[in-house]
Image 1 (cartoon, rainbow, N blue to C red):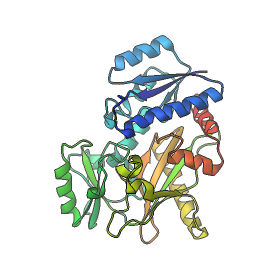
Image 2: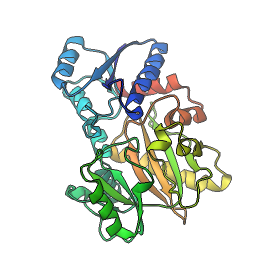
Image 3: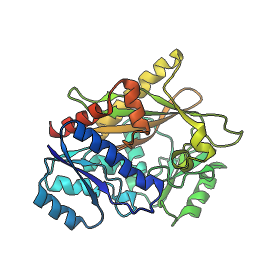
Length: 329
């Protein structure tokens, strides 16, 4: 097949979280070529008319969607796949609707809660009804996050605030208008953190082994979060001291089963396809809380999804073949 790998166009001087999409393009392209396909990387931006014109003139057999936003705005992540669907171009990856619903983190939390799936309380202002505050929230500690942007944009130690809901609302007002706006606050779960990848296949999705993020040797009082530095600043303390581990003790078997159940429930709720990832925190009583559902997690070889594949014994090209297979039926 002739496969177009569609990605958001990024300038050479872009931040590392934006440039990472080019690493994904290279890795996915090499896998597709190894599988016998012809590959064409395409960058796209807000000039959607040019994208539609190119698609109508080129008619690829499949588009592998790696778009993470347009013109630096994560809020526009669902627009390019929406164009593909409107033009009836076969696409590998989640449908535009699933990408929209999961990328709006607060809307996703509202849908999770309405479906009986646990997610921490949240606060926000100026959000749609489905994403409005769930009611009185009495947590003392909160973490402030961007509603739309991923890659932990704007998340550092100052994003975690103590002092109850009013302190959280004060931090939200301070961040109004900053890059990443709008923001919301989520009750901070003090506990372990896990990521679970999901991979499509002919018999339905499989859940990759749970990966725990270990906050190694964090000083007392330093928030246990995977912030922007932990993901992108290789010379930072956070980058070298947040360690991914698949070596769970046997006493975690019931927890791993529950995380798997909830990850599959998220897959069904949002009608995901191709590949995805669900992030969890575990409170002091051992209860999981779903933080986010990512409909197009990073496919870079050094990222968590690829690590989960390796742990599961699934070769990277085989995973790409399964994603392609889920798109063409």
